[in-house]
Length: 504
Image 1 (cartoon, helix red, strand yellow):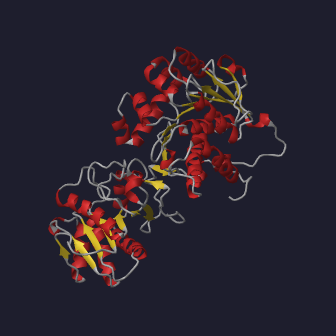
Image 2 (cartoon, one colour):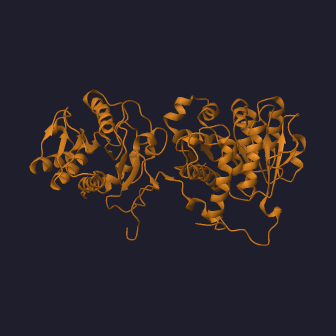
Image 3 (cartoon, helix red, strand yellow):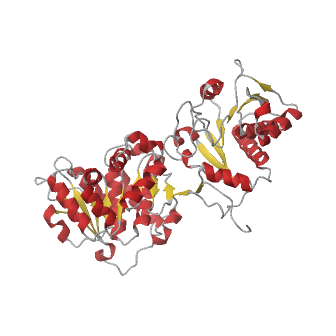
């Protein structure tokens, strides 16, 4: 496979695919390469050579990686303690060979963690990508001890391939789990590192491709969202433009006591470049003008569909009244590209007739549920959705024949044809009211500017999180970050991406 680039974090493989890759390259010294990559990374993390290193080795191939790393660190004159309490005679062949090389080089193991030592680095090599059950027995005890010792000694905790106790495919943590400060993952990225509980347990992630080129016979199962996924649609504005060049975006929502949601969506649409933004509010006593954003055109909801719209966001503050249902049906029956969020999704979850209209319409639509809304749409539970976020997003995309963004830590975007992505922008400051309304406004505006549904959804999700990240990097948040603040940051960033602002 000449001129084929190596795997990196953009490629995401599930465990079965990784096993196939390993099998296709069984003649190569993958474990030695993994141990070398881990040892090199460990050397970067240890601040002082005279601070000892604790290595926890498990009963499988992850333990073999740990033995290789420990042997190489000893060769570099580190004081290494390896803890291993399983039967060396039952190790898999490659791991047994790594154990033999370690002992032949003078290494020895202990059956438990020394009580009186202080560590400069702890390496977790207990379990790799294959563990789907909770760790038990001494392995569970060691996981708890490693987490406590890393905090006590203020030292890095490096996980090999995947933090032990974390499901590498789903990001679930069914029991005790390593809380790594760093993870070096082998061959390519694993989705479980990036979604659900993965980001809280992986720390900073580095991919070691082990000198393997991407194998077209085993393509990536999914990808990390990057700007390249939608860059073809990021274009500087032509000088010969007018407001009609950039679409009219509609927002359907704003029931009594919830007009703020519609206003946030409208402001987001406006500041991401819509030529015009119309808000149809269900609240008969709602405002006729947004004093903070008078460019928005607020009108009675009955006249919204007469505004010459190019796209419509349904759901921000919509409520579930009979009137809300009627207007949602009107939107679904239209030829407009739609963004469906919040109560629009809750209505669809209980109204099979409207759900059927959605799945059979020819105009594009995108869905942006959070886990509770996704559970209602699937007739499932939040726990089941979160247990396998990739599967849940894919099931929604198939059921409703729409691209879906399952929001949350590591938002999963699923296409109707089975492709999926995980978004890695964003931070905990986004866990606040109004963020979903802003995302709806962003996506609707891109649809109104003739972006394809899939590209619009990927860009809106990625931009939304990246804008929040920029704010936190500048000292705004994460605590106290507001949805409204993200709008202005996204406008600046979007213009940079399109090549019309300062920077790149």
